[in-house]
Image (cartoon, rainbow, N blue to C red; front, side):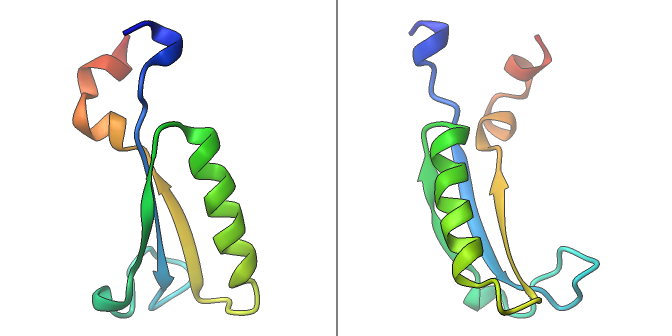
Length: 78
């Protein structure tokens, strides 16, 4: 697979935090697992949409997790 077509998986998740200064969810059963995306740009678009939908709740946060870094840490060192 060429470098420009390489899949760099990203996960978008979110939920209410127990404290806005931490990354501890109030209820893990209520965490919104939005989906897995093939690149950062696609994940960012979905993250932005979800974040805008919940802008009125200060304790609600969405995150982009770089799955490709967890799955293949050696590849990101180069």
